[in-house]
Image (cartoon, rainbow, N blue to C red; front, top):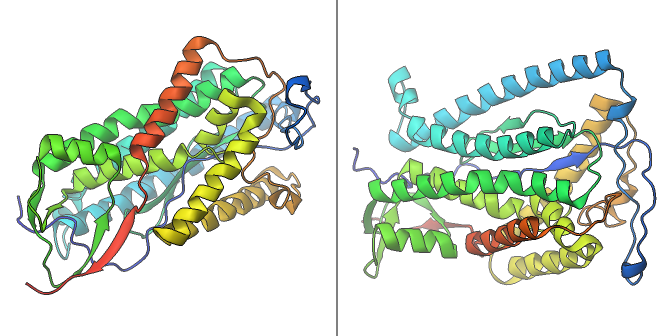
Length: 368
């Protein structure tokens, strides 16, 4: 194994990562909900998603075929871009096919984690007979070679139980593989003083990453840091993606889970979470401003995609009506059973364990 510090990367572009999102497609308006027990809460319009049911069987088949072709192409390009990034971590200047293949130590665990995450959502949706697109991976020449992935929910999710099952399946499916990748990465990592002649990126710690590091490496002397192995970086990214997705905002996975757990009270939880992130952006790390801005971009991109791909007009007015952070209603607001409540609170615990107040820090260190 090369003695080169694996995480000593020259900063060329800022990391930009899309959390997994699942968007409801618009269509007919669903029935208004009976909300006697929540009259004191704000009431945005119910979600709309009858578009899929209006298609003929041949139109659905054609749309699915095109979707899988796009998804396969995007996955292949993302695999290529992550291999290129991984090769750059292992060798300073990859120039041969063998150098490119050595990037598997980063690309395979990262893409495996993301694929398991997306497969969790897809399988749960299909199990409940909810029409869903295949996962779309997004290749991008940034620090990790991808901007993440998203899926599109094509038919309405009509109960909080189904919403919980679909929303929780992804983060939980990718959580354990991320832990395994991070633990293996720490095992193969090196430790040394933070002195180099390059700009380096310091990856922040959550409660969970600190515990794993302490268990695998042990306590570090003052002035000594871990130079993370590419597989460990893939695990860190997996836990970071899990954290982003579990934020209880809008149609992120955490928004689905929070609405399933709390119903319309999610419309109170989401602004509290947003205020917390703004506070972190002001006091801890400006990175959070990039995340908040990117949530707006995701919302706008989803509207454009729906208009272009599905030929359905979606008004932009939802942005300032709060639809960016408030989750749409479900027609059936029946309370969750005990098993699903436990799963939902497990997801809350995972968010707390994975939360990183300062995800990234760029350091310009003195020369050794």
